[in-house]
Image 1: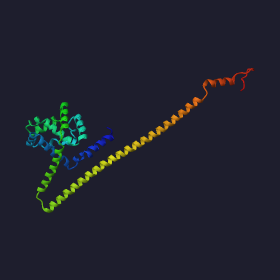
Image 2: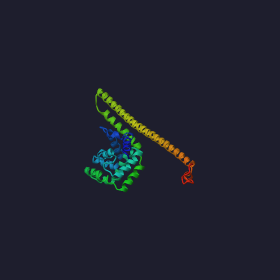
Image 3: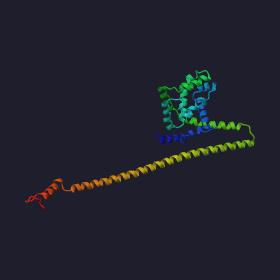
Image 4: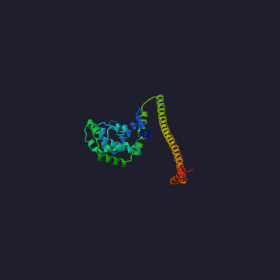
Length: 272
């Protein structure tokens, strides 16, 4: 891609697909994603989930780099490129499906690791070392999987749990009201930020379209100027051809010239 196209794709990732939210200072979006992955693991691979819980290994310990870098920090470039292809079509759900398929593919070996260090070492070094057949198998599984409904349900569940934790905290009435107001204010600020991001994305698109229109208008003007020049040149050629058609031939001109200079009886050229 050109620099401008690459920047447009970056804007699409950050604003349209919403990846910018997971890079904010509070990283709330990333916390939600880690909870969603944990719930997916619990529902789809209970044995692996239990094994990781036994060794106190949460998703944030091994999956946070996957989500923050879209697998680019540890996995082969060809595999990452395939993920990006699907990401632009299906959205952020792809990251969860890839993570789940990777863990599923290595489940048998992970449960054999009998210590915290062994599990972390395996996830850090072995899982990213994918062969070409393994990549193709995982991509095929990702394309067949659909977890969109579960992800939405888990996100709602996360917010409900957070609200219950806040409500369970014993505080005075005034402090409780103040806390609720602060939470409401924070939510409004977040909504405002989201709206500003959408507005900025819309402005970027409008600016890009305006630049495209200006480029097309400029090209149209250049083409019209070129067409006029060609038409003038064509007309000039036609005039030249017509003059040549009506002009005397070269032989006739030569005969006329000879007649004008033929010598007379006295040896001098005849006068016309």
